[in-house]
Each structure stands twice: as C-alpha cells, then as structure tokens.
Amino acid sequence: MAAPLESQDQAPGEGEGLLIVKVEDSSWDQDSAQQEDSRDSEACRQRFRQFCYRDVGGPHEAFSQLWELCCRWLRPELRTKEQILELLVLEQFLSVLPGGVQDWVRERCPGSGEEAVALVEDLQKQPVKTWPQGLNSVFPIWSRC
Image (tube, rainbow, N blue to C red):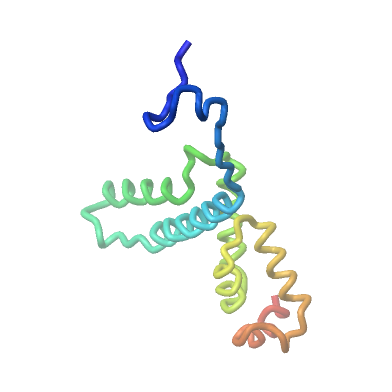
C-alpha cells in the first residue's frame, strides 16, 4: 500500500484525508466543441465542393484529393451511415432553398436536417415584414415551387 503524499512544509498527519476535487460543467465545452466541429465540417465540405481539377497533375491525383477531402468532410471513421446520409441530405436541402434563405440558414450552422427544417419553418411563420433584410424578396420565388 502506498503512503499518502505529504508536503514538506506540513507536519506528519496534517492534511491527510482531505481531498479537493474540482468539478467542471462540461456541457459548455461540449456545445462549444459541437459548434467548432460544425464549422470545421462546413469548411471541409466547401473545400470538397470547390475542388478544381486543373489544380492537380492528373485524374489519379484529382480522385485521390477528392477522396481525402470527402473523408475529412464526412469522417466515415467517426460517423455512422445514417449520419453521413444526414449530412448529404442536409447539404442538398440547403442547396434547394432560395439564395437568401439558404445563406440565412447556413449562417446558423444547423447540425441536422431537423434543425434546418425548424429554422425554415420558424422563418415562414413570421410575418414577411419581420424577416431579416434581403429575405423578404425571396418570398414570391418560394411560393412558385
């Protein structure tokens, strides 16, 4: 059995049995980490989508780089098939929204399709006059679809 550690400044027996434990609320750290992951994921998605063939030396290198960029975005080693599908469908959903609404939703970094849909539905429930500047012009386009 190991003997308890004692400070050289303390007499033997002083301070024994007292253990101070610092407990931190990790929920803020988790929320912060999720937002950072969301931003990183968006940056990786953009690099993947904006990849340009002429920036590489040929088809093999292009395919390799696209594969790498896709893996950085979708992270198949960490995500399930369902989570990857969620990301792909979320991206497509955002791409079919009218431009101003698409930008507005993207700025809010929805973590799921459900969150993105809720943002759009909440926006639609508000009177058009209260929409952020620039979004009220998309309303007629939206109703044509």
